[in-house]
Length: 201
Image (cartoon, rainbow, N blue to C red; front, top):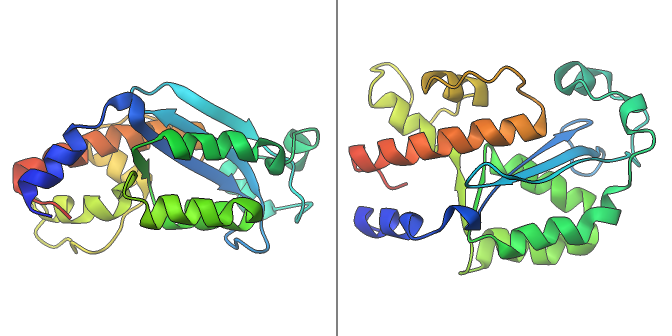
């Protein structure tokens, strides 16, 4: 897609039609780990969902807990993610632009934790012409490299690094809702820089 059409397509999407989502998990395996938290906001920053879930595969996750600070006690009485599967899917169905930081990880975790919804989610994220997917993590490196001579334009950076570059002052990274807010902030900044620099992919 040429530059003008790329930015025209994104610009035509209303902020209420943007879905920014993030997860916190017990680990990195979609088949062995659980989603502990799913959060989503729209393009205006309004919270659409922020829910903790009771895990079904793990009873303890010390390494992940050290990062996301979600303890087994915090989710002991939380609902199962399957109980909220329809609500989660309705968010994806309604969105025209789906935004995340490291989309592949969160998408794969959803596939692994919502097997009954796998087919529909795969269609929305990979094949649907009604939905666009934007991964801030992969759009940021070429923007960053344009002003940092030794930076690799294909090397992804952490969310907090991208946020710091744009002056975002959040201090609760690895909380899914807070990461959604940081991702949305970075999304608008990266898109503006892409347009200014003539980058479209």
